[in-house]
Length: 92
Image: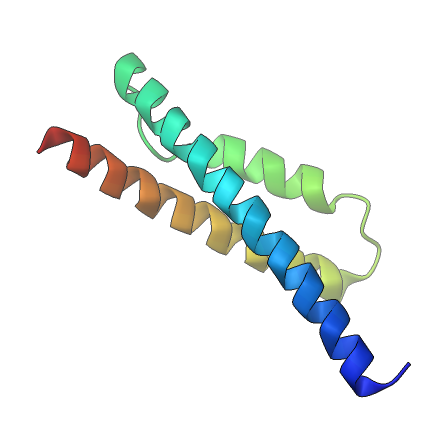
């Protein structure tokens, strides 16, 4: 496979990731609303750690495992930030 074809594959994957992230943040907004109703904190470290373990427990390659953990840690952080923004925008 040549470089252009490989790059095109990456572009296609990135488009899919973007669509999935948009869906994820749509659901995050709903979660934020439910947490607010239940008077729950935005961050739940136990649940985040559970997910990180679940997502990476079968990955043998330690470098890949670390990269995926880093990516999901950033996704979790961005999700918390989004919930904060959503929460504060509803108060206005």
